[in-house]
Image 1 (cartoon, rainbow, N blue to C red):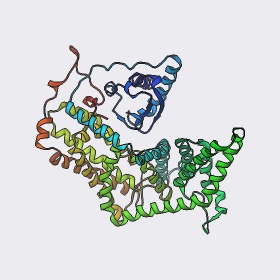
Image 2 (tube, rainbow, N blue to C red):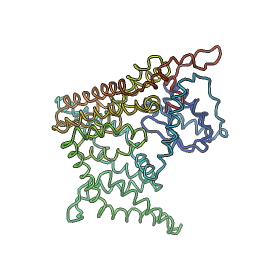
Image 3 (cartoon, rainbow, N blue to C red):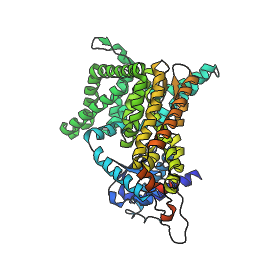
Image 4 (tube, rainbow, N blue to C red):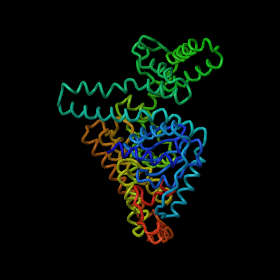
Length: 508
């Protein structure tokens, strides 16, 4: 039944993005189906947003359909299969006409569309595009990071309780195996992202984790396996890609299959051993030292700044560029102290949304959007609330950031007095982060501190939004009964969707 449901969702999406021939590539992250499209004009945005499974859409460097965690991983294979079938069976399918559905909160929708268009234009800078490429390297690794992180947390709990001593070594191996070789996966994905041969990128990055490097001296000191970590692997694979491209250009075709891979691995490997491993190791150490110093000495202030600014990063789609920093901290310390602080931004957003719900008692459109998006918000998926509620409204987005800043300051304060709150993996936030928590004072206190931060974020986000999130004019214009303005097909009831009235340009 679940497979049928996922296939039905994929089948509903495909014609609305222009059919199989219009889809040039398919990928997914934790919450979004990401498509490259040949002709953007063939997409029917309104019909897509009206689908029950779709939380919203985001137009960026790829066309992104927000389906939510878990769902997107199940729908994507079905969508890929349908695209393959469509390409082999028929030419491009014309986009289906949009089904009739309720059209409400028009002013809010217009504001959301304008914000999205402006954001897309501003984001098309070389620096931001580069950051997205870096994010594309690490996003495919997140499921393994989450799975291994949860297993590591379970194993730590069993060890502390002295339960199942015969099983805990096996769990430790399962949890640690991926992290021990993560550099290889980073190298593989880096070469793929930058246009090289993925396996060559992985081969060069594997040098970093090879035990034999302990016998090599560089810059007056012996190297250690893993030195430089994911940053070294990333740099080594980028170098390998450029060397490979140079070889493809100048090496005769008859010799290419022998010379190009040999030169690529040899030259980039030597540079990695006698340069990149040391330099990347120093940078990685600096990141860990800086993060610890920041929280040890300015914890509350650092948490306030980080928690307050993270929602704008999510809005811009740049938050995934922080994954290499999180990964570096996990490699060094066993957990990242930054992720729990950044997760407070989602708590502020949830508190903000509840306040909007309370203030706009007569606006059934926005209230329905909030009711459908709040469960995902509690689990750390903030896009539906950001793009469907707070960002188009303007001031509530700022007050949501205030809530995130307060929660971040709460956790940062405890870090400043020596109570570290960290996450053993990257990925979820909100309540979904609890299974991944770790710290230096025991799991119970770590959970209590993180839970306290969430509560602070909820409360401050709610209070700030309730009292300062609306002007009198906004309340006059928005706190009205929208049902009288709904456009419904004659003789049919207003449809209910997973995003309710957010099936408009605002709900992206």
